Image 1 (tube, rainbow, N blue to C red):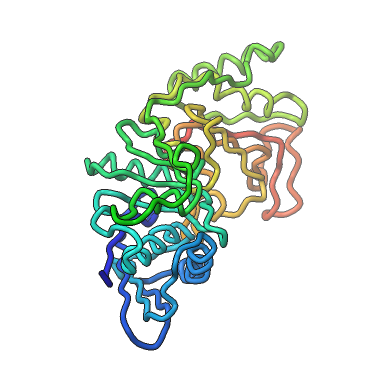
Image 2 (image 1 turned 180 degrees about the vertical axis):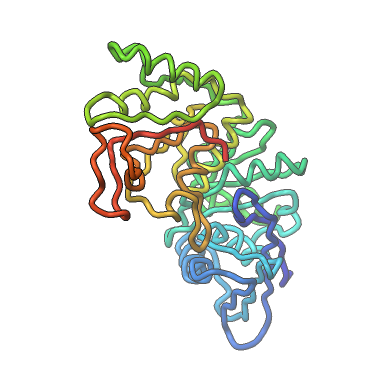
Length: 350
């Protein structure tokens, strides 16, 4: 069969849109063409896929005209997550694996030149997209990404360490099995909720500051923002860093939403599961770093603090009023400079 279809997903913000990787092999001048609004990272998959297939002991169709289409064509695609589905599509189109058996599976993973699989961003977003749409699909991901995606209830996630681990599952019945131990390379990840003891800095460690402690407790109970002002060394940052410990434990939905945003930014780890984030951007951070942006768009500190605390330390104020309220408020050198020594933080919910 010279045509094969492999399913994958592309990240578009918090959404993981479905992508069909179409591979066609034809006679003609040997070439490898990749279309479908692919970024430079995706187009570089041609060399990674070629080397991974050859170094894995499989046959790459060098004498064929290879056309790979990432549909839909108007959806931007980035990163190396399509390496694995492209490689499987080439192997299926050349008859080395069963193309029909690929139905009901989705794949994502970056290939090394030796055929090993590397983690990808947004694995949790992919699993959440499948869970939200009610689609019953089995997901194959590299190590670390598979454990991340398995946090979603009812997820059917398989971990693969090498291209051969995936190929062995879809070999035609007439083909001899490749010598790979599936118990070591390929395994299903249990989707049971990951539970761990979450600990935060304790407000009880702070001696004194009774008025500030009371204010933090009231703000945490009502979900309010707080502004702390005072001279350097008075304990503003110490108190602010312990504010998150006053918030209630995260629910499963809140933990999934927070982890999905962190996964898009490449910051998620299992050690931070169900732990309310505390984002502490530098006081010179740009607007893009705070609100997000870039190409492709990445979440900023405000989004990364979802269901947690956004801590703005040493934030600047505009110059003092014409009539200072207190003699200790000294005029700023110019309107463009501010008076530091303040800490502001709020319970974030983007």
